Picture 1: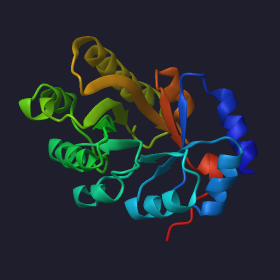
Picture 2: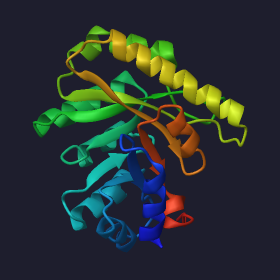
Picture 3: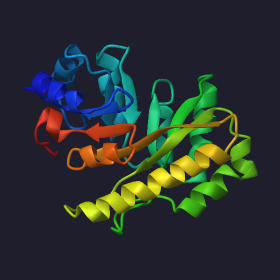
Length: 222
């Protein structure tokens, strides 16, 4: 079913949209099946689980860290992680920069904007994002690259609400793209949309969607 699910989803996505297969809690066999079907980008939300999978799976996989980040664990993935979603503190960027430097790498990151009305969602206000990108502290970070922004919409079936949230982030993304000219900030990625709302997110300009259950089936939490 995994191959079939992947083909179905990919058929609905424009060429410029990256599909991140959210493989958290899924066994290595499932990821291998998705890999055999041509999937190369996987998203995990626990660093230790991602490290374990990285060790045994093919090395051309791009690993995305999509969970809320604990700074003290960045060192375990700094040598291989391709993109870190959901960075919501300058302090975290400094840690990522320090660990990337040790491996002579530049690590791509997405700043997480808070677009949902739910209190439980993490993220920075648009004003906070601007102040980070304009700060002297950020300017000296040579081993990180802000590749774009990420936003998680409210968990709702109200399309007007989702439209409003996705549109606000797209508008902000476009504005920053025009105004920012920094060596460590190259805004190309707008990550919006998950299994339940990605078709709408794509319509609103998302270039990266994170889909788990629609590929792998329902998740078993442990």
